[in-house]
Every structure is written in structure tokens, then in C-alpha cells.
Image 1 (cartoon, one colour):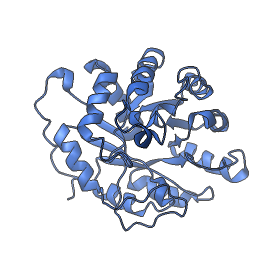
Image 2 (cartoon, helix red, strand yellow):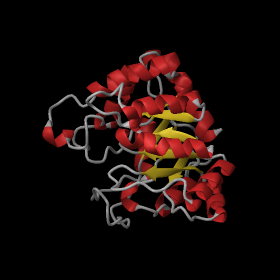
Image 3 (tube, rainbow, N blue to C red):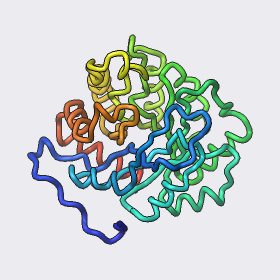
Image 4 (cartoon, helix red, strand yellow):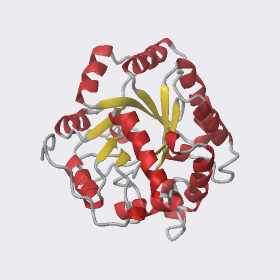
Length: 293
């Protein structure tokens, strides 16, 4: 299905309190035959295509989405870029090598790419972001008006944020910043994230709340409350950061949690984190400006 000139999908009949969001800022698309990286943490045996995602968005009145670079396929951005070309309601962030050239990035921008993703979670070591290659990459990102989309465990977040902010790039932080479950509001990662927001060049995603208890929680406590940490962290972020620096993402199709989480569930969680429809509307405006402006 191509949708460049198609009408907007009809929104479901809901009360104002249940309206929105308009933008899903974090989703993934893939097919089971994509080349999987050697260090992939999982290899889904099913497809979740752009059409599948758009069908979910249409069911719930969500019109736009941002596709996050998929760690398990490494630098294989080909499928996502092809779908961005087909569907102008989508934008994307790509995983690229540090030595990618400006001509390649220019072409990606024309296809709907708006940033690079640093998929550093589950990584045994961190790149040197002050190296010549990374300083050049970050300058190119900055020159393009893109952002750096960071995915990393909270304890390591300060080590990444410092050189990124030094470079002058805009930063978007995944999944609440993955704060330490033992002390989420006072841990080093959360403190560093608050300092980064104060620079005016950092945004935080209210996404993947079910992942905050840790990567093994779904196995260790299959009946546990996966959202309890996210509820408290979201309240703190609303109070301290506000809607101008917050984004919402579904993390569809919830890789690793497919049997426990559905799109309706993450929408319900978001509306519990942000119960005021006017605040959700402001978060949408933030997302539209960042990704589609």
C-alpha cells in the first residue's frame, strides 16, 4: 500500500480523555529473512512490516510514526528506507558505521531519515565518541539538522551523554533512559539525563515502560507488574521536564514481550502516565516539530 496521497485514517470514536497520541515516536519494522547481526540478542521468526504497523496506527487513530533502527540487523537499513520512501507518514533513524560519508546521509535524508541511532544496549564496550571518526560523524549529523537517538543502560548513560553534548548534536534518549530499578530517580543515569535536558538539546522518550524492570523480568516474574517503575519515572519527568522535552513511543511490536503486550496496552499505559489530554497534545506538537517539522 502506498499512502502519499491517501486520506488520513479515521480516528476511533473516543472521549477527549482517550484522544491521541498523534505520533508514535518509537516502533520497529522487519521481516524474518533480514540479515541478522552476529551479536543479535534475538532473531524474531515473524514479520512486522510497515503495513502491519500502519494497520495498528489506523485502528487507534495514530497517524505518524518514527521507525527506530533495529539493533539485530546492524547496518542493514535497506528495508526500513524502502518503506520510508513508500509511506511519507513515517520517519526513521538509522544505525550507521562511523565512517559513513555525507553523500549517503544526504540520500537517506531525502528518503525520510531524521537521525542516527546509537544502539549501545547489551554492548560489551563503548565507542570512543571523541575519536576522529566519531567527531566527524557527529558533525555531519549536526550539519544535517538530525539528532542522535541513544539506547543504552542507565549506568552507562553519563559516559555517552558527555561527549555527545560536547559535539553540539541534539539527543533523543530511549525508554526513560533505562534508570536503575533499585533507585530510578536518583541514579547516575537519571541525574545525567536531567542535566542533558537543561542544555535544551535533549528529549526523552516515554517508551518501553515494560522494559524498565530489566531484561530478564519477563522471564523471572512473568505475572509481575512491568509498568510500576515507568509510572513513577513518568510522573517525575512530567514534573521536572514537561511536555516540550518528552516524546511517546509504543516500541511495537514489543520484541521479547509479544505474548504480554499489545498496542492497546501501551496506549493505556501512556494515558495513565499522562492523564491530561492537553499535555498529550503538547507532546504530539513536540514530536511533530522534531521529526516532521
